Length: 237
Image 1 (cartoon, rainbow, N blue to C red):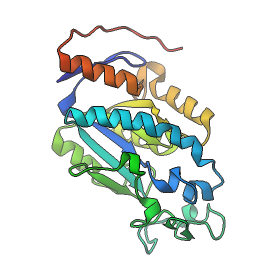
Image 2 (cartoon, one colour; image 1 turned 60 degrees about the vertical axis):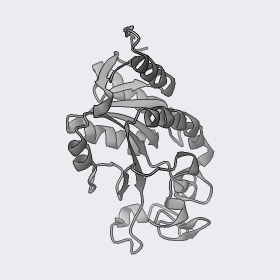
Image 3 (cartoon, rainbow, N blue to C red; image 1 turned 90 degrees about the vertical axis):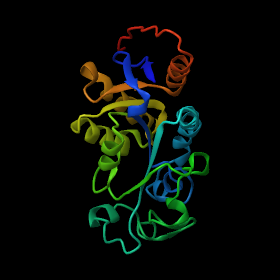
């Protein structure tokens, strides 16, 4: 199914069968009190505004049988894959591996490492466990995408300027086209989110395109109905 999505810096057309929705790190450790995000002094409520748009995009893509991929950032229980420089960022007693309200902070298998219930994966949706910020680093994400013939990523998750941006940059270097769903992303620093989104589509789309969940839903509905595509050129503000 061919989809035409109104986006910045220009509309983009893609084959839904060759596209995947990648939802990055929507984990309890980042979005709920008691996790790693709060341990670093952040207001975790700022990320929760991305949950409802993410769910809307997730439902729309699931309904049409598209590939959905989830990622989780976290570490082995023995912390062998956690660089010391990352571990020492947190205050003593609230560092990676320390006990928290949802189990050991940012450790695989603990409650805080799990994806928030609103966006929980279903059977058949790959979950990529990563120790770094980018979803391609030391994971099998690229192999999964290549085996499915995926060439377009619709990207959502947190945080916009860190794990989302790093993943988009990694994907761009691998020749994949990326569409960042801006309202499906979030940051502990709203000004960082705004600038990070603008950076994606600057200079004619240096890293990709930017749209939102409502534009995606409209594009999918038009494509499913067979309605003619009305391409509206949009300019950057």
